Length: 398
Ligand code: C5P
Image (cartoon, helix red, strand yellow):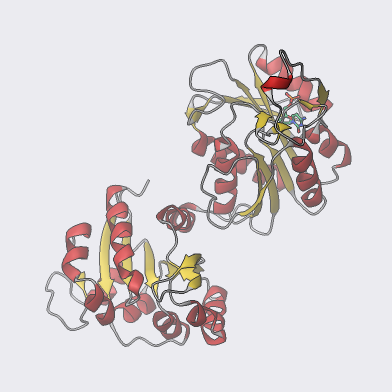
């Protein structure tokens, strides 16, 4: 995904500087050409040799060191970069760039680049929350600089709070957005459901299905990449939440119904990728059912609300997307469902086909539209299909 991309990584003197080693290594493994610039303080925490080895390129610290490969090195790197990632970004570099200060190699190169700059702030909570730092961040955002929010948790100063270096996957989501996002859903609000509902039998047992949630998560990730305001209503906790996505965790169909409906009126698009149980146990025992009490057990089921149908009834201008997982006559069933549920688009797939449907990384889908048209796609990853679905939603909202 990062082949032929030139990425300049700026490493500042925060204690998380050692975590930038993992980032640089992963960037290179994913195909990027990586160049590191370290501040003098960073070079005191981790040696430039580490970053030189991991990136496969010379590391620059000193503005005036004699590296004869480049004529004017800060200009050369500034021009070469497709993207700048400043990780960890300290209060110091944020303050410098926000105020136009260019007094070392890193700040000077950032000032000289036209590439996007992504800051990954990581510092003590009090420093991060300092109104001066926050104002600098807001100022930089206004100028188009990008940020990854730090995580909350244990910090090196032995406190707990916001300021931790984010997970690499979160940083990579933001990198992809900077490099490939086209802002197709800027200013749009989208809600997406994902995963299989769990309908309680008793406090320890439930009825569910094989849905992993991957398709819904892939759509959420693609929508966030296109700058949408994304809320993901998830029935699973097993997957990492994509960067910049608001998450609501739910358990069963009734909770999912409530969550989707609470967001629906103000959204521009809604995608029901969740596999909702059509039925739930009529009585949900409040205590664990004991086998000693029953030789055989019959569980009576009652129907769950059809959430998508309900959204279709109340929809105004929203672009509404449903899924149809079928094992036969996929297109016929899909067309019928699209009409009955009053949808704008339906993603139909034959879950009996190898490489499609539940709990696999790929899917084979047809997209059916309200006007009767249809597009059939070959087998692809759920991530790829997620981007196509998001592009179609953006077209539909235009
Ligand atoms: O009718 P069927 O269950 O096959 O329709 C599938 C679509 O409807 C999916 O988009 C699924 O998320 C949604 N659905 C729902 N509420 C249900 C069952 C399915 O919203 N109770």
